[in-house]
Length: 385
Image (tube, rainbow, N blue to C red):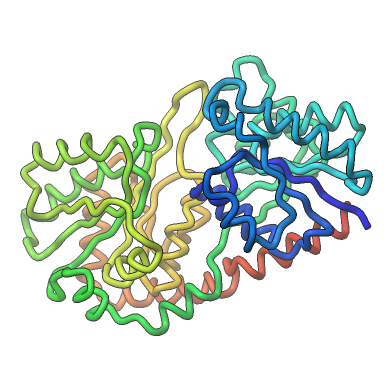
């Protein structure tokens, strides 16, 4: 039986959007069809015991190497030996272009085809030597998570016939949770005023992620509170940039209108989504490190929609996640005035807000359920391996 070897820099129990996406999309593969090589993790034993996949971890030595320039070496060593001992492996997959370099070299040594995933900003940034274009160009298939990611690949000269799109999605249990939660009860559980209009952003607060537009939202709040004091903006997420954003709030004298919540559990995150009136993430495209940096897709928009919440998004992959006028609204991410006007529109036109939320939920149920996406991905690999 043909097997696949997946080499992943990011995989559970390390948390993150890529880890979650890769875990979900391979969920239809049995251990006899898929082996995953990823880094050593101090919590790996408890996770690997319950994991459905055949897991191979790099040695404990790799914990000192994972964030350094030689981070690919442990993955290469483990991948090399796995290909030596397991003759059933027919092709190699990489969960991103950084692990794609390992897969590219292994494919040359063992003469096996490879596939890899493309998300967005990593496609064009930091490629002064052209190795990314070479890795993408040599792949049998590139799995892009959005039409935006595909467009970036095409701009790099990648053959369109190699590119397929499999977006991230949300599990069916998100809808099940959304069906039993109520807004008032969720607000009471979180200590949120049931009479206020609540805006919500969920994001990692990192210097390289300032394109998410939280600073634009803070500037928009300065405009909003002038005419509506009955509004509050919550930011869920943590990171080294939190103090930078908090300073912006202090400088804008918005301490009574903006709350940084920090990291929360999955259960609490769902209650924050249910509590809000509008989910806002006005992400922009920035040009850094030789390419575009922005949201590759934005799974949080889909999560908000499954709870029946309208979303306001910006550029990049958010154009795939938010369908303007159907599941939410597009706002110019470089204009606090435009962001504020779109928020006012949704707060004042409750029928529009409700309609966008309901249409967004139907859209997610029709196109963005992770179990359905994983099934389609499995079928695609089965037919093309």
